[in-house]
Length: 324
Image (cartoon, rainbow, N blue to C red; front, top):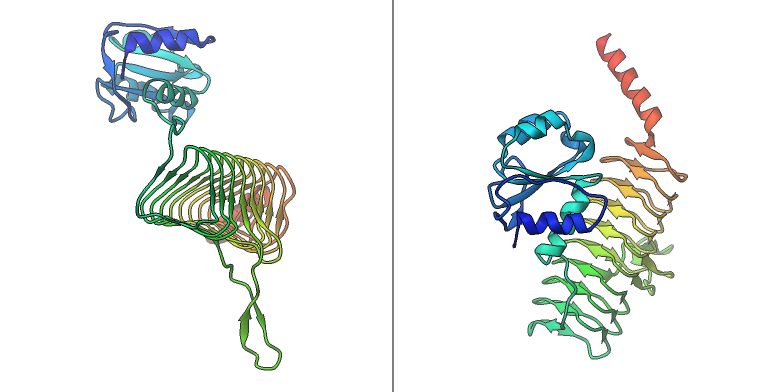
């Protein structure tokens, strides 16, 4: 909790921040909230996504401090709104995050180890410093967990999995389970499980959501590199390699032996076929099905996925035939 005056002073100290201070500087701010539902003790933000609604939202707003994208700062409009203070920013969302870290203790480092009594941890597991292990967590043989990690309730971390530092795993997830790999017996024609001797290796600063499964490798390892963020309800199969700072969003399915580069965005409900290689800085659009390799710095959409340019051409052709 902090007053508007304290918040403004701190932002000024960060440098390169233009501030417009109005009355109510003693008002205490207890939490951030969306501007259309914020009240007097909230802070909010507006960025370019709201550019068509800025006048409407500011005039109706009940909060008394807003982080506003600098390009949206119309002087006449700003001056017409009484009792509201503004922090002008090139990246309001990032600055709101800074506010939460400074004044609300958001994302603070873990200061001590807390292991719930219901957790089951193998004797051979190696745990780092300052970790949180929640209710009913299972940690298998020879698991290695780094410092400042958090494991959510009912999550299972199977044997030989390695977690780096600052890893967060949500609830009800399975890390290091056996993958869906089978070979057909030539005589009986029955399918028998292919052995999975690989591991899951999760590097530093990786976040994994709830109800997510990451399978261990079969003959090689499944690897998440530094800064990877994985949403809820994601399935990542055996031998997958995911590059630094890549985001994989809810309901995505990454099949076996896929390689994904750095700084990629895999949109919700996307499906990537086994054995596919995706370069760096790639965006896979909503509900796309990737069936071919993708080079770096491309955006693909559709099922099967094609370049954004081809996707838009196909849409135009569909519209033409529908008119006919």
